[in-house]
Image 1 (cartoon, rainbow, N blue to C red):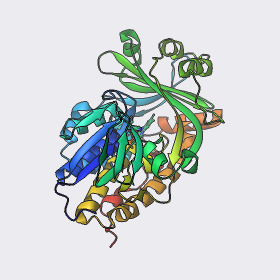
Image 2: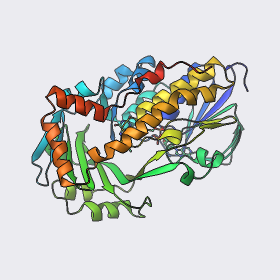
Image 3: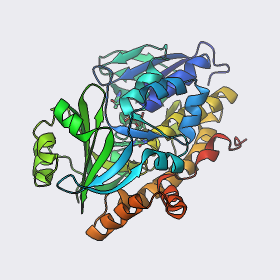
Image 4: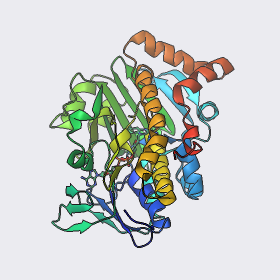
Length: 388
Ligand SMILES: Cc1cc2nc3c(=O)[nH]c(=O)nc-3n(C[C@H](O)[C@H](O)[C@H](O)COP(=O)(O)OP(=O)(O)OC[C@H]3O[C@@H](n4cnc5c(N)ncnc54)[C@H](O)[C@@H]3O)c2cc1C
């Protein structure tokens, strides 16, 4: 174990939110950091995230809020529509901001790029991990290195977790849904949708879309599925699932790109997040799922808390980090499981109930109800006492 942080080497696996934030904090704590990312290049765009809670405070400490504000999506409302595109209910961004303090809505790629622009460590793209033996890491290009610290920040399907802790079945909890996200360049569609997050929901299925910069439209699809197994042809599977929905579904489905993001919706539940020199952060150890909506915020927070504890003393740092983070992660996961019925209502009456709440969102009593539905209270994680 290193006695001082200086000159010690860390490898961060994954250049997502958790990995980039870990690199950011580690290099400022004096570590020599290498980031490896299996994607061939930086992943732009993605899906819209609502960024608030403790991650927002971490971004403030990193001095990133101005960069995030510049990337903020100009969404004016969340609007539920029917299959002809007629409005069924709407919650204005102003009302939403009142229930989600300080929320910044932006694309996942925009949050990641704001952090990446401030990271000096080299990022080796197109490189995955193929073996981890405590501090000895072998990469997919055949090279290897000895590190004092190995941070597994490689997401819900973490390879580091699999190599060091065991197979996914031991840790991944499937939440009964698949999701897809992609961006299409279609100026007419973008003008039709506008800067409103529009949602079409029928029992068991949801399509959401919104205009993004440069005349593009971002789409999010969500549907129930008994099996976590992913289709071999996601675009064909989406066409089969959503082809009958009307509204803008046909336009979107006709242009699903080859590299569409398509995944099962799941959470990660592990008893211990670290072993030897290896520690997991972000979705790799504590994915909360899109239903909980705080994964990016917790990924940023986890990175900060981890490095804070390492800087306080390497011995026992991983355990202290886990002690501080895990209750917030578990609380948010539980919240996410309860939120499934809101985001993907299983029946027509639940969809009507949700839309009615959107319509009444100006009333304080309804706002309080929505607040308890969108924001698990995990802000204390940054101020919680460090375990001795
Ligand atoms: C549709 C959707 C909506 C969401 N909405 C919100 C929201 O509103 N608010 C919010 O806070 N969160 C939201 N989230 C969750 C949030 O996006 C995630 O929790 C967050 O991005 C997790 O960050 P991460 O860095 O841990 O993992 P990831 O973002 O998954 O990053 C992992 C990185 O590791 C790389 N990688 C994987 N395997 C390897 C390997 N073997 N070697 C090297 N690199 C590897 C991947 O390519 C990737 O770049 C949403 C998620 C989804 C899917």
